[in-house]
Length: 362
Image (cartoon, rainbow, N blue to C red; front, side, top):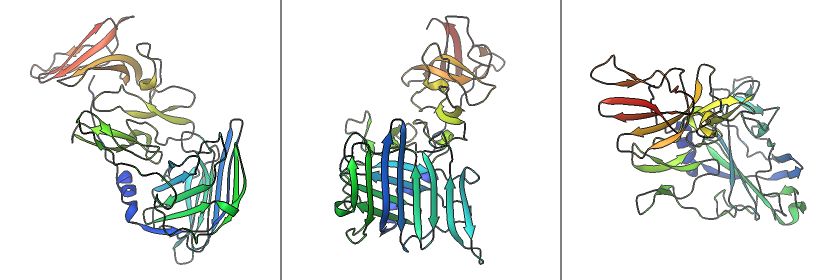
């Protein structure tokens, strides 16, 4: 088996990381509802304010959109990144007679699903913004005490805050507020929205691990190629780019899951059918999970790469025996697959002279 390793630093993540330099625009909040009834959850937010300006884009999508919500009960913001995909499920745009985009719409009728928890967005330039999420995002086990929201695009940060007299109802599982003025917000910073201070994702002083904060849909991850830590994952990334978190978006009917074991290089992610577990997330050594394509099979694996710590888990591979291809005398190659006799597991070691494989007990 040949395996390639890739560490991706997404332009999407970098764009949002620079959001702090964007203009902060407090807006009036017209209505917010956060509700949970049994297994059904909803977060609805609307704002009518001339300050809303749609991002300038020619792709049919407004680009990366980040949504942060918080409350006194849940002060650490919960984050969603909206997939930048276009189409019947995704973004569409409307233009005026001069070809300038005046409205964006996002549709995801069957949310929450592997595409997004966001069900709908309607964004009208110099007029309004409406958001429907099929999840509360916030802790629904008690009164919220208020509601804060920040919408970040590639150009600006918009925010609204509901508290005090704007709150209509605040009970366990249900929060409602309306007509929040923007006058009390100086900017859209974490401090202005009552969010706690955070520390940067970085290598810990002992040099042995990563520490610090990332957005709630990201993880602070060590990058073996640079010896540094950075935030990875995100619900606005394509599934294959969201490793090792594996929470990116997939086509409707599929969800993001691990399709390789987790090792020092991270893990690979792929879109697997809804209702099925990704191979890399399945139990070792049974490994009954699904792969992203019908030509791969889920197999148990012991892996050793040079001086790096060994790893074991379930991984997708091509069908074929766990063996060494001796056709190249200068560099041994493993493959074509990881198949072993019953009750045995393929062990692979990568070294200076190539790859070596054999079957043995789990």
